[in-house]
Amino acid sequence: MVSVMQTVDTAHDDMIHDAQLDYYGTRLATCSSDKTIRVFDVRNRGQSLLCTLARHEGPVWQVAWSHPVHGSLLASCSYDRRVLVWRESAAAPQQHQQRQQQHQQWEVVYEHAQHESSVNSVAWAPHEYGLMFACASSDGSISVVTCGQDGNWETSKIPNAHTIGVNAVSWAPATQPSSLLCPPVASSAADDAAGGRGSAPTARRLVSGGCDGQVRVWRLEPDGAQWSRESTLEGHSDWVRDVAWAPNLGLSRDMIASCGQDCRVIIWTRRDEDTSWSSVTLPPFQDVLWHVSWSVTGNLLAVSSGDNKVSLWKESLDGQWICLNAPANSEEQ
Image (cartoon, rainbow, N blue to C red; front, side, top):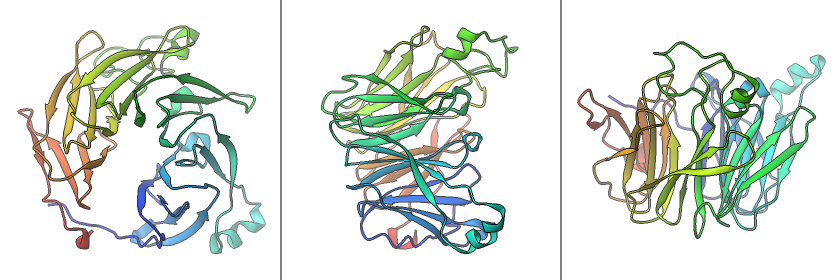
């Protein structure tokens, strides 16, 4: 049985494009075509507006919270061709109580403006890699942006990642499949450059979805100098709207979900780096699909569609994907 636990009235003046909970599930960030981002305290099933962020000059498509090891950071991307990284300002001890009763103060600590068209997606890398995000643009390229220890931001690009444009990007987990089943391997400095620290070394990977109807997997070369295309996954017949690489918790396979304009969700899996990807298509949907999102354990998949419905899916023991809820009507959400 699936039920709605909480409804948040965002008071945005236009369509909402994304909503993301922070690491602890206590704050909700939303973004809209009204060019603003709103952050809410949603603890104890309540709702309190903490701040409204208004520095973008066009519709804001997506927001992403960083891992708390990097502090309170929020990234946003927009039609205005920019990614903004916001940081919550630290309050002095004597200001703490007053700050709890007033709006939070946020500042833009970095502005990424190196794309020639709308930036459609932004995603923070696993925290094991340091402070790093990837963003995808309608100009067809993907940027990977890293903040060094000196506080300077550096950008590497994947040009011509997809023809026409890139709609979505998602990071692979820092742990490789089967790492719970195999003893950890001591990592060297080179391993840390290519994969996660303190775990079985694995290459850094991204997955992207584009207007060419393809899902592509990208791998950072061992020298850390450039990204190369590792796989092209074909199965969609129209624009791929979203991709999501599932958390694997060290289990025995990689898993990616993709959805698109063709009203289909495809689940892509592989057992290890030496095997090819296989796919399963979920039962047909009745409308365009906009987003796919995995639970933190990687065993539940949420799918949102253009008819204002959300469905939850889980794989059965025999490998079949089962819908856990009949999608609710928009009035019920």
